Image (cartoon, rainbow, N blue to C red; front, top):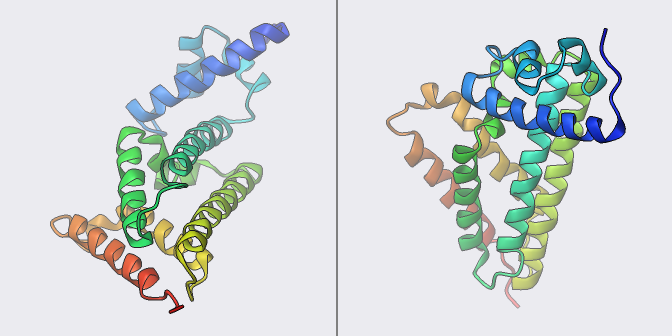
Length: 204
């Protein structure tokens, strides 16, 4: 029977579950990481896990949202007040995100087939969709701010956001694109998006 934890213990254990889950998901993958593996390392009974998270998918979603939000906040801090042209910002921002995903594999794991299959709970899927909406809104606000600071553009910032975010999903089809041309393909798409925005600027 799961033991009772004090409020202080709950805060500490939840933090440890998130940190251990992040470490194990990235090291072993989603399928090969079990709740019992995580709780054993944290030092609590498997049944106690459910005092903190509804499922492994719930924990995965919590970890993903925390890590993705860290990246988003850092991106805003890095690029929000830059005076560079918007086409340069787009390229730098995309490069920044791709580098962040290499350093933090959990940002890719959430969209892996194994993870998506595992996240069968409707509430977890709803959270993922809601969080995607939040990221879209945050990126759109940032891109709109870029455009407002640099002139008038005849383009919807939401479209630019969706174009940029679509690049992330190409990595799951690198085998179809061709691994030997994948990086060049991504760079060409980023260039095309940058030019699309740059040449939509209205003349004063």
